[in-house]
Length: 495
Image (cartoon, rainbow, N blue to C red; front, side, top):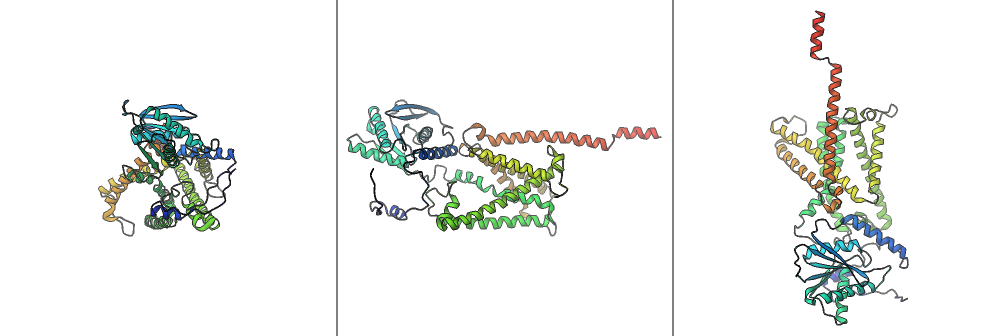
């Protein structure tokens, strides 16, 4: 065993000044908790867990790919030969792709998905090396496997028909492969692509990133919708509720903007991906700047705030179920509309909301894609519900049915344009949230089209409930009010 004592390595002067300044900053975040170097089973579990998380985020990676995928065994590793449609049989160009993953992750099906992504990007035939990795196959096995595949590729292609490339750890192996090929006297490829793995944009600019970011901003509206449910118990709701919601929006917007600005200024780095990592994000900024003790105290305060907000939403949902049951528009309305005599509260709707909440959280265990689909559908249905208010409201405004009243909140002459914007934005967000994106919902058809399926099911169930409720109300009205014919007959008989 070779033991190297701790030592300081100076910043190299052979790199750019920008790179030197970044390297001089040192570690920008707490060191990750890795298994011990000799804990083989621990490393296997770590790799399996990380690969599983990546799978849940990227889906199967084959959606929308038109082409062929061939598996070859070269030496002791598998090579995925991916040929997208449109590549001619006599096109001899090959991109030798070496996947990333910190030299320990991204093997098997993830390597295949990486090959498909690379084939789409380069529009050429791709050989992707599923090289063996630690903990079972330590250095230099990964590089040895890449060299074996490169030699096999040289047997089929001229060097000027080959480009070697890799992302992250794969970029390291690509550079090492070329240096080793040079030292061994092998022909060098026509080019080398060394990719850091940081994506800075794409052909559509930031348009689709902005569209998807709407998924996060949309959740803010839930709180104001919940506050609106309590207007019935508010004194002078037409006077106070609109102004309260406007003030809350302004304060939340200003406070949220300052919080985001402070987070960006305090973050050790805005380019290393930690801010967008679900496991890091804002908690990572707090603990890295305030230390573990003070940072965790702030996180406890955040957890309390989240709990309070959750209870507020649960209260509003309970209130909504009770009111709808009271109006006999829900199944089992008689039971759900009862109020406990001792507490004066609707206990059964509260229990129902709690059970359904736990059930949804249970679905999230091991399958975050399902939970994301459910959450997105929830917000999509809220926007659909908003459209059911804003569209009739615009019709009434245009017909002159919403005149301003003294002392009450009014948009005045801005009412129509703001109403139009509300409809446009609501329709856009409903479509945006329900659009079948593989990157959001995954590639399983039932998840990718879950919003459409759920909305169609909700409309169907609602239609059935509507006609059933209307029939019941007609029967009840018939029992209370006799038919006109019966009244006439009774009058004639008395005469």
